[in-house]
Image (cartoon, rainbow, N blue to C red; front, side, top):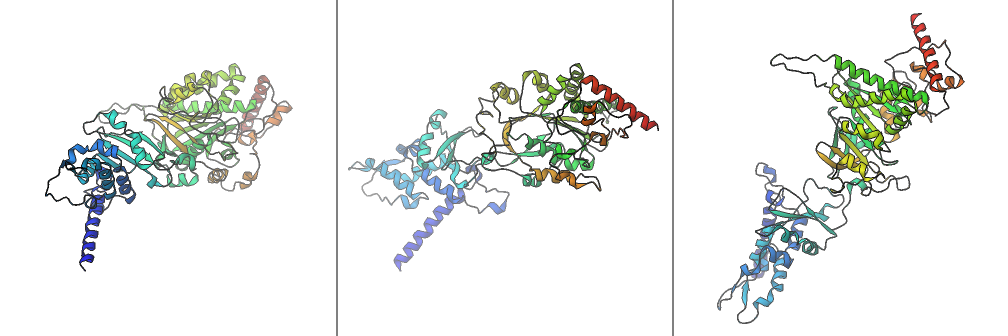
Length: 570
């Protein structure tokens, strides 16, 4: 009976010590969740795995001696003194026993000292603390295998505390350890990994469910990607450059932005335009009957390049028109200089998507002097468009100084994916100190191809006004893209167009001029019945076909316009 009572009492004391310690360490100062103004958290305990790791840390003689030197916890032994066991009265009994045994040489002989190891461990536990990972650090996989150790300076020089890194790693037999900078200037922090950290951006892909869970609440901020801490990253809508090699995932931010803007297109607060020299990225939205974009021009042939010119000119006309409508209000209490164009039905934002920007530039240059004007116009749109609610999102596989020399200054947002170009472009888009800070898309992002399932497609760095962030963009499959395009089909439109292997479209159906076949035959027929509808979508030819010279095309186009004017007069 006595033994049972003794064991029961011992168990109660042990539970009180352990749970009392876990309750204390769930306070905010230890990285815990208990908050005074949140009663539900008052009785919460420190997670068991963190308490266990705290005990492991306190077994390190180096760490304990550094934070709580033994000389402060040793005393002369009295002949008739009573010295009960130290370990069982501590919430960390194993740590007390280990440290006491390692200092046993101080207790030998008649002049042996009494070591207050329990008090030493308690003091060390105050200055060497195991905490959960900070909120801005997210590691995939088993979270119990990753945590932070914070060691207070306690009148030591910072470099001496930093030198404990390997001792901390040894205490846990950790797979890896890394310093972590924080606002706690009085502590040195280490991130400890008991197993290989799982890179959430590499190990996980984010599909259409990401966009369903994080819809855009306004056209001003578009959730497009996931950051390393698992939280969504939003693009503040502005002129944006997307740069990456083939397979890097440039389609992710393009398709993501289109999807997030779709609700505002429905509302009439946003209007979309598109230029896609190669065709695949915007092809689904250019299908006959799909009215999501105001205009899309697609293709590489010479007549297609001229359609791109028309698209650019339409955007320039919008900028000019809005510039002419500015009516400043200087009345007191009503001051408005007209510098802001909100996204409303009256002044919808205009977003122009350009895929394969370098291909477009080369195509325009092939037109000679005729192509120089639209290039200058596009530069002007980038320079002044934002003031009038006009934004350009352009993507390219290749960057050259000739093309991006002037453009870069007017494009504040940069999305840099995997590429093989020189470090010049990494510094140009992400900042001069990008490589020094570890932002290196060339070497830090692995290969992405069909063989490895495009493992790193969509992973990249984004440069915004707030700095550079590593992210992975959400991915939309062909099925997802077509489903979105179908939402913008005209009533009664033929859904069969989506069953075609390639987009089938005749520019003449949209009043855009003679077809490629007609041009190849020598010009358009003068009796064409196609009406020129400036409010309609742009058209395209999918295949690159031989074309006539610029002069021949100009004559054919003039003939078509003459015919169109005659039909309208009738």
